[in-house]
Image 1: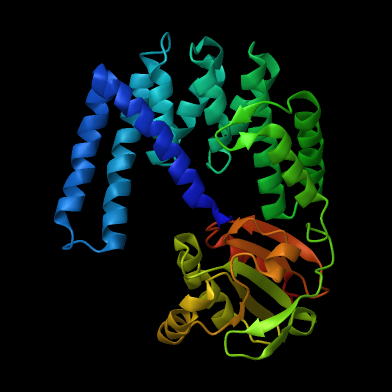
Image 2: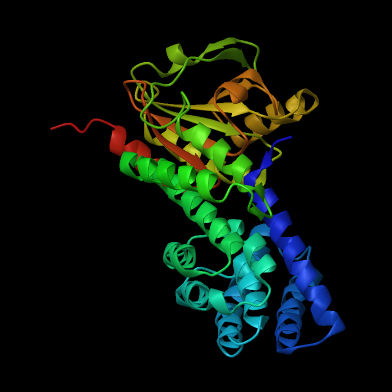
Length: 361
C-alpha cells in the first residue's frame, strides 16, 4: 500500500518520540521537564479550539516551537556525554523550526554521534532526516559515514545522504546531482545492504531509489504517454495534453493534506499563464467512492485544471513509479521531464515553471 510521504514520516517520528517519552515518565529528567513545559503550551492551543481555525492553530504552534527549538538545543549541548542529547535531537526532528538553532542541533549530531551509547536508536533514526531542511544535515551525515566506528550507523547515514542527494537533485533538475546520488546508492547496496532503519532494510530501499533514477520517468527522460479518463468522463491522452506546453503533472488526492495545501500554488499557475503555454494535470488518487465529493470540491474551490482518475494503484501511477503523494513532475515544452519533487514544495513549483517559459525580446 502507498501512503502520503509525510504521513509516514510523522507516524515514524511520533512512534520514536513516544518511546522516548515513555522512558522519561518512568525516569523524569531535565528533558522530560522541558518537554512537559512545551506540551502544556501546545495543549492550551487545543483547549482554545474551536475558537482557533486550523491555520491559526498551525501558526501559533509554529511560534511555540520556534521558541522551544533553542531551548532543546541548549539542553542537548549540556548533555553531550549521555544520550539525553539524542532525545533533544528527536524532538527537533519532529517539532523544531528551521533556523540557526535547528542547524546547530545537526552540527551537534555530526560532532557527537560517535559518543552515542545507544547506537541502535541512532541507526534507526537516520533515515528520518531525509526530508528535513537544514544546511547542516549533509555535512553531519558525511562525517558519520567517514568516521563512525559502528557499521550500522555508517550504513544508515550513507542511505540518508544518498536519499537526500537524490531528492534535491530531482527537485532542482540537477543531472550531475542525480549521477552523484546514483553512485551513493550503489555504494549503499554494495557495502551496507543489511543495515536497517525505521524505513526498512537498505537493500530494498536503496534499490527502489536507484530504479527510480534509471526509470523512464527520471529527469532528462521524455515523458511517456499515458491514457485514462477525466473526472468528468472524457478520454485523456497525456501526450496530446502537454505537446508544445510546459506541463505540471501532479500525482495527488483530496485525501492527502500536503496535496490539498498545494492547490493554492496550482491555482496560481493556471491564473498566471494562458492554457496554450502551461497546463496543470492532476492524476487523482482518490478512491472511486470518494469521487462525488471530489467533484463537489473541485467546483466549490474553483480547481480549473485537468483531473484524471487513477486511484491509489492505478495504471498511470504504476507507469510513473508513484509510491507516495504528492509527487510533481514538471515537463518542458519539448516533452522532457525537468523536475521531480515529492511533498509540498510551495512556490518552488512556480519558479521551475517560470524558468521554462520562453522569454521574449
